[in-house]
Length: 318
Image (cartoon, rainbow, N blue to C red):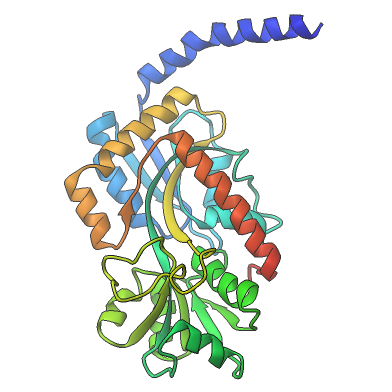
């Protein structure tokens, strides 16, 4: 019976293959909608500006903001798997499924990863008047004083980098203060309320350069080209903290692989355009690219890693 069923399934797959290929060949035949679930609008619009040149159809960006990014993510999870509705989101996509028991989506089951577009590391910063000149000094001060740190919001990877450092590793009760975005969080640290920030590198960078914030550690594998004097966590004895804020694109699960590949090919071409590359680097993002399978493997590892950090720290969506 099992052999017969396998034969029927194999025959069905063979019969559907030409149909799937035909659909991919005619795709796209109408506008594509990019649903932006998190504040990654600038990267989504860079893609939307260039993709029509390659795909021959308009690309429309629709912002579906929410405090967690879950609203827009749920919209795409429920969309028709035809390649005409795709998700632009951040690394919070991989975090929220562990932080929120009611995220409304399964990061691996409900989506077909298209591409990781760009990434940037997270950085621990302090107000320029704060006495710590190094990460070790900060951790020593946190043993004797009640401190708090700012992040761009609950569920972001900067939030989890802060929890990973302070709670899981240093075993310190440094209070998390979520803000509505990286800009307000960086401004709060500049004002000293709170005096510490865990942020993706873009927002604090101008303040670090102006001497209003001091960067103590960065979560990249190697030192950042724009902050060459800031040591990595690995250099400081914390090799487990290699963490990034990333921007990526997903299709609904069930989207034909040929269509996913077509979108991946198009977006890789966009990321290799010199003006796009320059614009991303100006925003302190590193263009990534790669295959759908490479990105699927990375998403799987990110979901697993952040689930451990959430479990170790008891982090919550405030």
